[in-house]
Amino acid sequence: MSAPVIAAEGLTKTYGSLTAVAGIDFEVPPGESFGLLGPNGAGKSTTMRMVGAVSSRSAGTLRVLGLDPDTHGPAIRSQLGVVPQEDNLDTELRVRDNLIVYGRYFGIPRRTCATRADELLEFAQLADKARSKVDDLSGGMKRRLTIARALINEPRILMLDEPTTGLDPQARHVLWDRLFRLKERGTTLVLTTHYMDEAEQLCDRLVVVDHGKIMAEGSPSALIRQYSSREVVELRFGSERNAPRRRGSRERRSASRCCPTGCCSTRTTARRSSSTSPPRVCTPPRAWCGAPRSRTCSFGSRGGA
Amino acid sequence: MTTVEPMTASALQAAERPQRFGALYIAEHQLRAMRAYGWTIVVSSVGSPLVYLLGIGLGLAAFIDQPVASGPAGPVDYVWFVAPALLVAAAVGVATEEFTYVVMAGFRWRRIFWGMNASPVSPEQICSGLVLSVAARMLFTTAVYYALVVAFGAVGNPWAGLAMPFVGLLAGLAFGLPLLAYSATLTEDGGQFAVVQRFIFTPLFLFSGTFYPLDSVPVGLQWIGWISPLWHASELGRQLSYGSTPGGWPWVAHLAVLLVMAGVGWVLARRTFVRRLRG
Image (cartoon, rainbow over all chains, first blue to last red):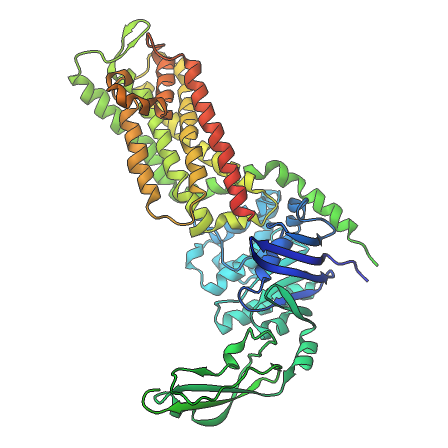
């Protein structure tokens, strides 16, 4: 058994009276792909910032590679690759130069940076864009470049904060493929995501976080088994104009699943567009919609309700 | 159970170079990024002194009959008087450009400071690296300026004047580092940088004894010169060029004011970077 590369106990972060992370415990062994799943504001990114040694904790203990991030920030960061939520590539540099200058921050010689940059551009399927301007890349390409940049120091831990948010389905799948290859190579991955399908694709184990606390923990398949039902009923109370298309019940296939914290509640919460809509409310199911199937019933109301 | 000790040891070792040279790596990045507008830098560095020295040295000076300034050996040419101030103003102009929009771009528009922040370099090193790169640009600008000043015969003692580019650099830092500290606090550009350009840099340029001696302006306006790094650096440059003006401030006083301004700005800027990036 391997000692954990990340170990958090009672990890807490407060900003004044706001508690962003409320005493969470978790461990990540080397080579594991570990996910933090939860809605916006759950405390995922704050946790990532503390693990990434760029934000000090308010309470609890945290060790990354056996070191305290508050006292050994540079040493920890030298072993991390970080893919932030928002791209922060340098648009005034060419694609390849972005990798080279970033490698220099880790004290890597220029020649080594150049060699690794070429290898990583191949890995990220961007070799033909090496001389392009960053602004000319698509959103998916920019994410892949950011991942390539995060790998320039051959990190022991790759941290990805919502890596596929804002990407189209095809770009997501290309990105998943690249991350899956890293996982196969034994790179420790720590990622945050809103999406259960992404967690299922990439994570060996995950914690579901909401309001700064861990609500559930386990492997994606175990969590689905434990919390999901095969079907979810989705009721919408819409206007007359939209109602006929959805009238009656019909099944719709979907890859989305819902988490017990309600982070995916758009698919499970009945919405009313008017006070004159029928007072029929569908409560969000307590269990996840683990089966890739949901039943949608729409209720139209007359008079532009 | 395997331990993490080997990983810990290699992490500590890997951090050694970035902890020592991090600021240089940041400066290297910034200088590479400047190549994107490298032609602008070269053209403005050469074009600006050409225009000013031609316009003032050959144009305006021809209409000035009375000497406006004196050195230890008596009255001096107007272009001798004005050249050090123009050189200093060029460095301050670079600072005004690089310590405003570039800082906003780093924190907000391009967010590259956040990318740097995730690497082993520290916020203080990010700040220092930025300053180093801007200092390099200022020194390039003032060196080109000085070469043209010599070519135009606008310096009394060309050998002593060799220190003038460094005086310009110091002026740029004395003005620019407090400005950097301020820029780093801003989360969006609501026109503050335009205000700095129009209502701080321009008045300082006009009322800091650039084109005429400070004691020739009303006493009520002379304080602008006293707090202006432009005036202190211009006076230093003039002393290098043709010696001390009788009754003027000693060069040590000018140098001390510039060093204090730059030093205070330096401390504040580093603190602001830490607060912003480690929040």
